[in-house]
Length: 516
Image (cartoon, rainbow, N blue to C red):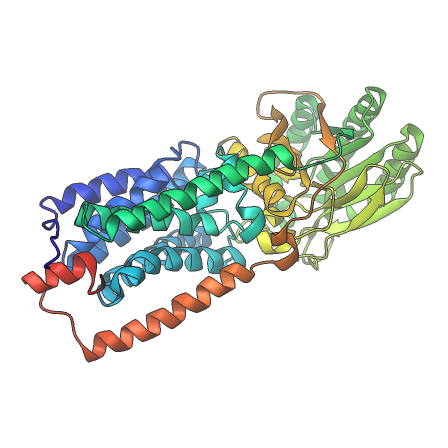
């Protein structure tokens, strides 16, 4: 019996424009619509499969490059030669799964046609998130779904990149149903996908309800420099705090003049937080700005403050050095007895914006009455592979700008779900937030408008996840399978070239492939 097929798309360009609009609303920016992340690949694939490759592929690449540019504009990412090249590279990389689907998919059969695109999308996201200089700051589909905590619980098992696979599979199965309608095997694939998605969401909801954090909490306080302290610092430097992050262009005498009022303000707020019952006090990234010759005195004051008020005190500073690399972005934790428990240097300075020498990436962890405490700094949290930490609470001092802060903090919150610890991100000029081990928001503060000490009651018992133990084994498996399938299909395509575009057999192959 001959299988009935839906006719080719009559207006594929409408699919392109609809897919482009959805893509621009799912870039991981301030104006994301979570559903748009699912709609974009569905429509772009529909356009791609019904348009000649020489026309379709450049059009899709234009959409993916434009999406990266919109992300930069939404978040006011500073334009440098490196970020510009990053924009183009992002667009090209995230267009590659569409190339794979269009050129190799017609020879893959129904099973391959369904799985090839989502596997390629997951593989690209994994490689960029692990080895790219920008990590998961752009392009990770899980970030577009951060409000759907039930869906995101699957990342505790497989890692964050699986969300790209889930969304991509929805796009290929949606196109299968679109092409074949009620004719088999489309209904079976649709039913299987709907069942799997329901199991992921229901299982995620059960995890959020059943994850036991022990019920015990600790009061954590977050401290930023006050507006008065920032104004005084700006008056000394003649420029805003963001403008003087490059230690090569700062007068060291000005640093020393601005330091004392700034430190007085930070330690005064720390004292106030301890008096309000906080047992752990965390400063934002670069809260203190000190010259190297004053660094020891500054640490002695931090030690004395922790000792006097019986708190764990995590201070964060930018230390200006007389010689290259001219600066250190670092944190120091002091215990209630004043003893220094760790020094940590930022492992991932922002490419093109921060010239500091990277730290060794070894994340410090200490046992305390409030669980195992650990610390990374700001951009470090954008690299999931470096955040498999055996801890109960991870602190992330951050520094952002108003357009970036809320989104960047939500991205960091995904690490809590993936690894099963509470996460506290104390952010300057952005959004401070605390999350439990399932990603539930515990407390938040808009630090672009709110002033004063911020507090959160944070669970002291984490719950290690399979992903935190096994790392990216699932992603590596998907990558290996994708590469192997691409090699096999490329050889098959060379031996049996596709019919000329526009023929009836070409339309059939492009739409559904040879499989049943």
